[in-house]
Amino acid sequence: MATTPPDRPFSDLVVIFDLDGTLVDSAPDLTEAMNVILGEEGMAPLPEREVRHLVGEGARALLRRGYAEHGRRFPEGEEGDVLVTRYVDRYAARIAERTRPFGGCEDALAQLAEAGAALAVCTNKVEKLAFPLLDALDLTKWFDVVLARDSLDRCKPDPAPLIEIQRRTGRARGVMIGDTPTDLAAGRAAGMPVLLAEFGYGSFETSHAVKDEQRFEDFEALFEKIRSLGGRTGDVS
Image (cartoon, rainbow, N blue to C red):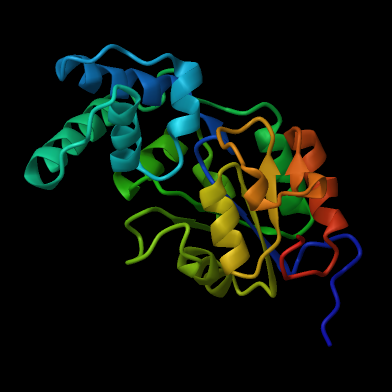
């Protein structure tokens, strides 16, 4: 049976990160792009503090929730497709104007990599947005695999992207680091422990049964949180 070197305790592990609300604080730029569309459609802008909690399932879901905040139904079919395209184009043009990695993010990535972990991103942004954002923030260099919403035929909360990341990295264990119920559901379905950023965008009902040990308050705490999982590969709940 293979053992991990004491100086590289995570050499059998892939750490999979969500992007928005976990690695980066993108709410300012997401808010600006959505408010442009809402304004063009005759609706008032939404404050950033409200938009933060609408993020997590991609552009269409964000717009749909923005419409719902105004008591309006987001159009389906071609009309909805056009709105999504307008939003994506607007957002892509200013994708990292105010978006920044959360404090301590890169130090944590360096610490995990030094301990032998493979690092990956699993996001519900489409590739057209995910890769330019990581490049603009000089984060791409840290990740062995990046899977976006359209990288496979399934996306979070389906476990397929997480399972594929583990397959590509060849690691025996995986852990999902996220901030929303979407991340929690994907990790649980993949049979991975899940750690949730308290500073992120998600909100959780009691039905999610998220324990204190499944949360981390900042990136400085992440390494020890992952270490505390030991060799477990199943859900920590």
